[in-house]
Image 1 (tube, rainbow, N blue to C red):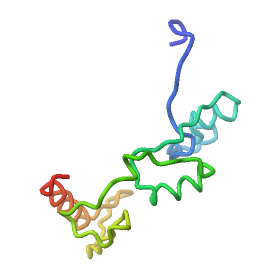
Image 2: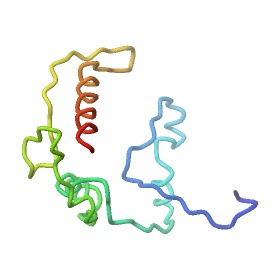
Image 3: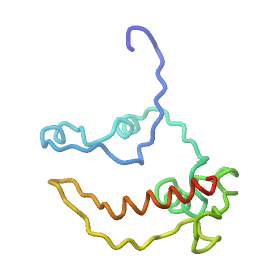
Length: 133
């Protein structure tokens, strides 16, 4: 890259999840700080995108307030979403549904899994897809 081009554009977000470091040596070497955090700390120019397209505005409100000084706005396409008729949504005014899944979590070393929750997700997705979503 340094021998061929004089310009690079990096797209990312320093507010997202940081790197996972399992080594104290790596952490001491600064590898638990993301590339974007380091570039920002060095004073490199940042252009912030302020429109999000994926979340309902009620869901986007919290990260906008907590991480982006309330500057994040929702595109009209995300704001106009309707609750799918093929899923028994608790309230059309609420963009989230919580399901009570009574199932035990399994553990394998550092990994956790819950087959009952995975089956519930598959059932919801199947229902949404059957309804044309």
